[in-house]
Length: 509
Ligand code: SAH
Ligand code: SF4
Ligand code: F3S
Image 1 (tube, rainbow, N blue to C red):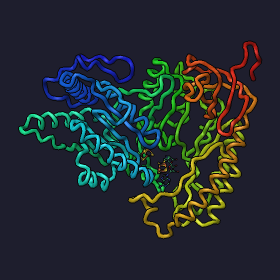
Image 2: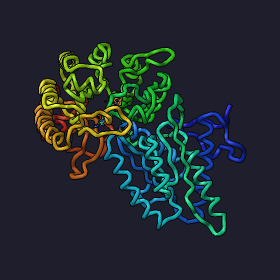
Image 3: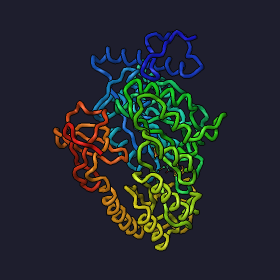
Image 4: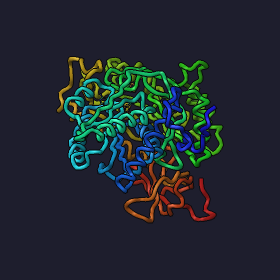
């Protein structure tokens, strides 16, 4: 038995109780706790040397998965003793990168130029890169060759090892400083794994909000849509065991969380690979039982795997939010086939109609790609047709980006940029017009709003979300943050609402 007792919140241990004199233990998470304690000693020494706090800055690019990973990385950084900095002028800068589209990568290279100028002023500064972009071999080769000032590179499969890797960098810095004359040459620590089936539990996380939190239920993706890099950089699909998920959610609830967002690239295939398979709908029912959890969201649903069981569970639930993100990608069955999406236009339309019929107040949102290789004007018209029929509450529209390493990048009939852009603009204006009309649906009603923040533009207002995910601004004080209150939706402003708290005694419906 370890003498280290776990304390609340989830994943925290008392680092001061860890004996760091011997060798690191082999088992996880004890090994990482050991390295966190080692890093903490280093940070404390450096603070004594410099007479000031050691600071860190973590920037997240990309999707909810990365945002969640960043909470874990931040949890480790704060446990180690770093204080948050407002900008990149910090002792440690970490970028958690995304590579889903070409311009995501370009953005990171742009930022690196700026970091190199900061490092000239502060040679002890530690620069780290992690996340999806680091899973690409050519990216790491380029960094090794032309960005030698980067200290630490790791990928998506071993973020739990952050403390161990950071310690290797810090140790390298100490050794370099002891050499005379001190060269302070960057020792680049690189650790990229191709894939993993490992899920390490019980590490700290720093939550962005006190009242809502994302919870990983699965990692990776097995779908291999032909345009998409995610399966290559996030590895094969693996589900967390329901006991672990529920344990985390119970602890979050005890810690004040009332809304959870269950995260996975394709939540509808949750649990299929577990020793004792559990369906996503069953998991949702278990989460519903956790006392204190009032709202449950999830992201993302692949249309091919959305079951009737899930629709039935959502329909009867008071806690599962009235929002489903159901990526369409294209409305043309021919293009869907080339994308390897494994549903047709007709199947998708039937599913959307069933959802609208069974759960009339549901908000349907989607992702659409314009300009996939071989897309003709007729294919594009099919996409517009689906948008008109489904009437999305909102939609993310993307210009197809040719990701090296994906099958679609090698397809011959790439659509010229100007053609794709012109289609994109037509799609955007259709989507926006419908979205404004759909948003108006609940005008005049009084509905529960989870208050999320104050309002930057007007301090007399607070901002929250409806169950269907629409934003509402209304007069209120910041004491309401984290509470669910009934708000009368007085005016729809396109994509958000202005509202008021109903007067005491006023009837709500
Ligand atoms: N797992 C989720 C989405 C992950 S990526 C799902 O299956 O829905 C988020 C969105 O980025 C995708 O839905 C897709 O619309 C978009 N996307 C992915 N690869 C792209 C590419 N090469 N070009 C343009 N958009 C892309
Ligand atoms: Fe990418 Fe398709 Fe997997 Fe979503 S389901 S992450 S689009 S491969
Ligand atoms: Fe980007 Fe990785 Fe998410 S590539 S979209 S951050 S899974």
